Image 1 (cartoon, rainbow, N blue to C red):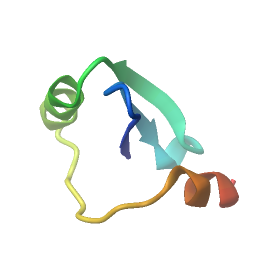
Image 2 (image 1 turned 180 degrees about the vertical axis):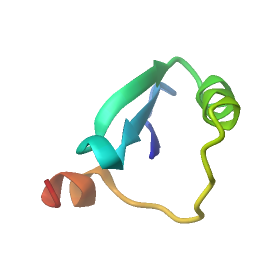
Image 3 (image 1 turned 45 degrees about the horizontal axis):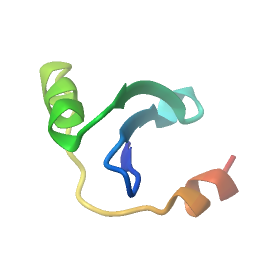
Length: 56
């Protein structure tokens, strides 16, 4: 899961590992490239951080 904050910092969290942060990037493009290089599959949709934390 790719999440960004208002400052543009992006974090990639792995839902399989209980949403552990596996990458922190200073911009969206860098995070997206990392995901594509590691052959992750894109899924359309949005999920709020509050919903993720609610499920933990």
